[in-house]
Length: 63
Image 1: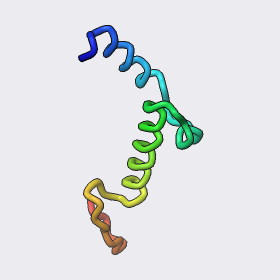
Image 2: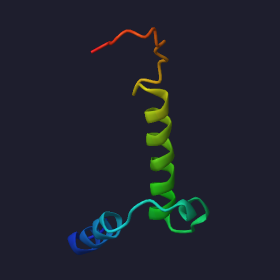
Image 3: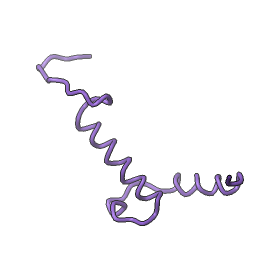
C-alpha cells in the first residue's frame, strides 16, 4: 500500500489537471481517466438525465 506522501502526490496530479481533447490519445492513466470522465459527463448532460432515461419534451415546464 502506498504511504500518505505518495497518495498526496497522486491527488495533486489529478487536482492540477483539467480536460484537454488530446487526453483521448494520452498514455497517462490520469489523462485517460479525465477523458473518459469528460465523455461520460458530456453524454449525461446532452441526454438530460443522470439515470440515462429519455424524457420526452412536451413543451411543458417540468420544474
